[in-house]
Amino acid sequence: MRSILFAALGVSLAAACQAQDAIEVELTAEEIASADAPDWRDVSAENLILVETVHGDVVIELNPDFAPNHAAQFRDLVRGDVYNGAYFYRVIDAFVAQGGLQDETVIETHPTLINENDRPLSDAAFVPLGNADLFAPVVGHIDGFAVGRSETLGTEWLLHCPGALAMARDTDPDSGGTEFYIVLDAQRYLDRNLTVFGRVIDGMQYVQKLKRGDRAIESGVIQAPEVGDEIRSMTVAADMADAIRPAYQVQAVPSQAFEDAKTEKRVREEDFFYRKPPEVLDICGFEVPMRRLPTRPRD
Amino acid sequence: MRSILFAALGVSLAAACQAQDAIEVELTAEEIASADAPDWRDVSAENLILVETVHGDVVIELNPDFAPNHAAQFRDLVRGDVYNGAYFYRVIDAFVAQGGLQDETVIETHPTLINENDRPLSDAAFVPLGNADLFAPVVGHIDGFAVGRSETLGTEWLLHCPGALAMARDTDPDSGGTEFYIVLDAQRYLDRNLTVFGRVIDGMQYVQKLKRGDRAIESGVIQAPEVGDEIRSMTVAADMADAIRPAYQVQAVPSQAFEDAKTEKRVREEDFFYRKPPEVLDICGFEVPMRRLPTRPRD
Image (tube, rainbow over all chains, first blue to last red; front, side, top):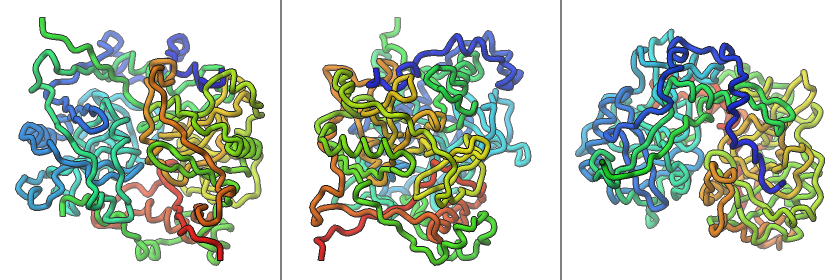
């Protein structure tokens, strides 16, 4: 059985989760209230973006609640076909994959956006992760997105975890508009300085396959005569025919299923762990579960 | 200039580093003593393993100081050509890429190893990272490898950061021997439970391109008739002819260059950061600089 490392680790630990004292994970009022809440949330087709790459399809959920103007402009650009045939032209391993129009004269024909790097603390259902974080006073989730919060600052913001979709910019915090990047490895020091406006919910493996540039040469921009990997097309799912439109659900936050998913990763009860790991999660190392629903014609 | 996100970030911040108060990063005696130490350490050709994949070459440094028996057996297996033509047969995005012999009857012809998951606290030159960690009481570096330490346990161990090379096993902690994995995203909860015995120092971008399995199906093992991406060959650099043998250096630990590299990532002085990020590093988000030397015939 040596060939199958951690064979037991993919198995759901329902029994262990049941035995876990709920108080230990610091349930909030919202979480407790969620005992009867549904376990899954439908991703709105208006917020679901399909990115067809040369390696496979990447699926993004936009977050208009945190970044309404960025989500709206990105959706408009996708609908205007501006990214079709464009490239991931600046890709640095373990950092980010940046795509967009690249040509500065073309970029300048599109409006820049006032940054939406954070927002005032909201009354959205925030579920704390339940342990410390290196970069923010409090971290947790809102609607499946990783969020940082500060009572002192009075703000909350989306985090630069792997898969985060954010807007590139120049030195001016309000200079971004068309050039986007997808975070490959966590880059938490960028939090609050750039606008995260979505996240990859499926297909990160294809983002990881994108051709890299050399960070030491023009900050990772892939150099001619080579070009980066092409964006064959981008589509807003809402614009697709019913029969072919993909449908996704993300685990509901708060929900008991979400608490169980975190506990399964935080508390390792399997015999495999002969030494018990610390009962802690890195917010960027925990993927909120999602699922793709079968596509079918409307009844 | 909007097309080039963070154009300034690749630039060395020598000026800023000079201005930084050295006391703030908690220099150890070893670090202070290192002011005159060389900035680079040669990687021994006996510890340098070249992995030729279908996507490109991956370069590993073994760590016989922490895991002498694992490093020795792996080197022997490479020299015995057992991995040539084998596959990365279990690859889970954001988790690990596992390769090896896969066939259990073949695996059983090779010896298992007593785990080398940690070792007693040593007097090796340990340079603390200089800030807190979520998983270990103290973290830092020895010889460019990320290390965790506990005075209470009296031990130190290599960390499951991206690029770590470790040995897969069954439930028995001493059941590994031939099946290895490379960490894709940090998996710190595996620390002290499995033996890390090396790390990728070059070519992680090619590891990231490896064909993935589906974690939900047989724990991510790629299912027939498909096979994982092939390991075309593995070679110990010491066995190569002088004229073609690659030579690598890793930034010396301790050294002033290493302290400067950490400060550059920890303290963001650029105007780009209109909000100063927390002055903190995640041990798994900091890559120790390395460089490949020009290959040349011996004089």
